[in-house]
Image (cartoon, rainbow, N blue to C red; front, side):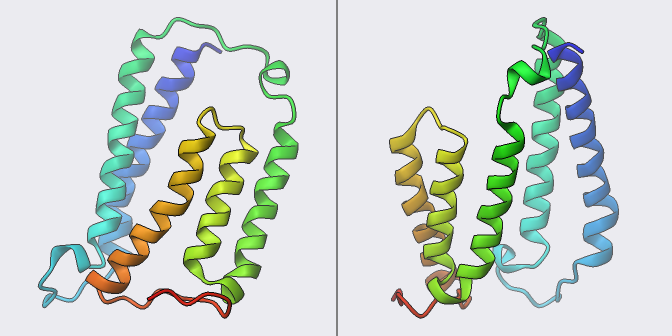
Length: 160
C-alpha cells in the first residue's frame, strides 16, 4: 500500500466520521438549552468545533494524499516496539484515571501530556515540556475563571 492510498483512505474516513457526527450524533445525543447566552458555553459548540476540525483534517489528508508518491516501508521495520508503546499508552490512561481524584485534573493532565510526548520520543522535548505545563494551566484558568466551571482539583494541590 502506498502512502498516497493510506492518506486518501484516512481522509475519507475522517470526512465520513465528521459527517456522521454533524448530521446524526451531535443533534441526536447532545442537548442544549435555548437560553445559553454565550455560544462558547453551549454544550453543542465544542463538539461542532471538533467535528469541523476532523473534517478539515480529512480534507487536508485527501489533498496531500493526491500529491504523495512515496511507498510505505514494511510495517515491522517502520514501527519496532509499537506494541510496547501501545501497552505503555494504556498504562498512562489507567494512571490518569487512578491519579485524578488524588492529584486533580490540571496536574494529572500535565503529567499525562509529558509522559505521552516522551513515550513517543518527540523531536521537540522542550516545546513538549512547556506545552505540558502551559496548556492545562491555560485551560484551567479559562474554565475556572472565565466560564465558571468547576475543574476537579485533587488533595495535593489547590489552584486559585
